[in-house]
Image (cartoon, rainbow, N blue to C red):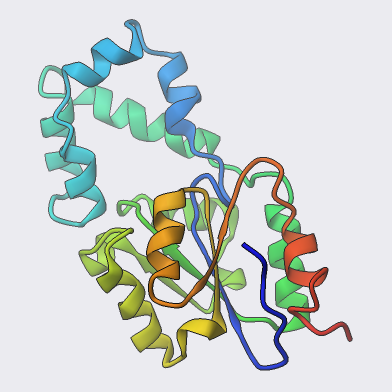
Length: 203
């Protein structure tokens, strides 16, 4: 989509995994499996992760549901995740610049309680005014109620938000409420989008 130029105050809303932060699930975790991914997925409770992200179940219950044969495998999964969280290219730099420019940034993420350890590990807290995570709210993207919750909490209008997410369905849901959404890919340049279209006035 083409971004609208604006002169008024606006807010940047970020997805985390696949947008700012590398997701270890699809690379490092799958790489150590002793069976094909399709076989592993077939034998798992497919709703366990969803319920974990929604905060419906705690960590131990998640382990029991997804690894009923060996709960230690759940702890191993978490360990692999924690060892491999890292910024995606350009992510740390844009967060630093937004903070320097005084542009408020927020998080809107589908993720379980593990996000708190990720935040500590990567020192993410200073970059965000507030975080909206599915496990704390009980809603997941692309549920329109989650986006509305953010708008209500920020007391802002949809056009004042610019939302970045690597999933098209989440962007479409945001756009249906009038939020400007950017579908993130490997070629996305945050600097060009935010500072190259006069979205953020240059000092």
